[in-house]
Amino acid sequence: MPLHIATPLLESRCLGLATRRSVWLKLEALQPPGSFKIRGIGAACEAHLRAGARRFVSSSGGNAGLAVAYAGRQLSVPVTVVVPQSTSARARALLRLEGAQVIVHGPSWQEANVRALSLLAAGDAFIHPFDDPLLWHGHASLIDEIACSGLLPDAIVLAVGGGGLLAGVIEGLRRNRLEDVPVIAVETAGADSLNRSLRAGHVVELEAITSVATSLGAKRVCQQAFACSRAHPVHSVVVSDLAALNACRHFLADHRLLVEPACGASLALAYDRSPALADYSRLLFVVCGGATASLAQICQWSRRLRRAGDGQPLPTGATDTPDDS
Ligand SMILES: *Cc1c(COP(=O)(O)O)cnc(C)c1O
Image (cartoon, rainbow, N blue to C red):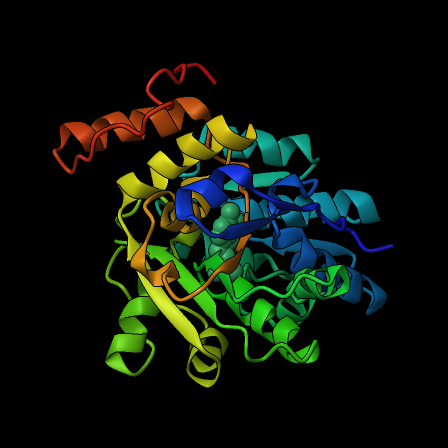
C-alpha cells in the first residue's frame, strides 16, 4: 500500500462556468498530509527504508517537511526536520503533530538546510523537497490515476515551485503515452524562477523570493523541470499574489476547500479567465493543496495587498469571508 491515496477527480461546475469550459479537478488537497507531495516523498521514504534508512531528515518547514513527517510516522521511522526561524508557528505545530523532531535554526532556508545536511550520519536519509528522481517517479502516479479514469484533458494546469510536480507530471504523461497533452505551468510574481529561466534560456536563480506563495519559493527550479519544459509542450504563466489569494477565497466559497496561495495561483487562471486557457476546452487542474496557510492569514495578506494598491476589486461572493480560521 502506498502512503498516498488515489484522490477524487471531479468536474467543477463553478470553474466550468467561470471559464466557459469543462474543468476537472484532481483533489490533491485531500492527501492525508494536505498536498500532492506525499506521492513522491512517500515513494522516496519507502525506497530509503528498503535500503536500510533508520531516520529521515528534511529541511522544509512547508508541505515537503509535513509529508516526510507523515511518511515517517506511517513507516515507524523517526524524522528530524530543521526549519528556519521564519517558519510559522502553525507549520511547526503541524510538524510536531506528526511526531517529527523540529529543530529551528537560522534566518532562512539556506542556513536550515546546511544544518540539516551537517546532521546526516550513517543510516540517515535526506529527503529533498523537489530535486530527486524518486520524487518525480512518485508524483507521476497522479497521471496514472487520470489515465485510468479515462479522462483525456486538452491541457493540465499546475503550480510550479522547484519543479518536482512538473517533472513528475511530465514523467506520468510520457509513461501513459500522453506526451502530446500540454502543461500550463503557473507561478506567482516573485517566485517565478521557471518563467525567468525559460526566458533566459538557462536556469537562473532569483535573488530573493518576494511572493506570499511560500510553497512556490524555490530560488531556482531543478534542472529536470527546466529540461522537461523544453522537451514537452509547457506554457509558463505568472500571476500576481493578489490573484492567487482571491482564487483561494473563491475556491473556498465554491468547493469548501482551503488551499494555499501556491495552489490558488493555478486556480487564478480559471477565475480570471486567463487567455492562456483560450485554446483548450477540457482542462484538468491539479489542486495541489497545501496545509500551511490559515484563512486568517490569507485574508490578512489580501487586505495588505489591496491596501498597497495592487488592487482589483474583491471577488463577488468572497467579500463576506470571515477572518477567523
Ligand atoms: C511544493 C508545493 C508546490 C510546488 O511543487 P514543486 O514540486 O516544488 O514545484 C505547489 N503547491 C504546493 C501546495 C506545494 O506544497
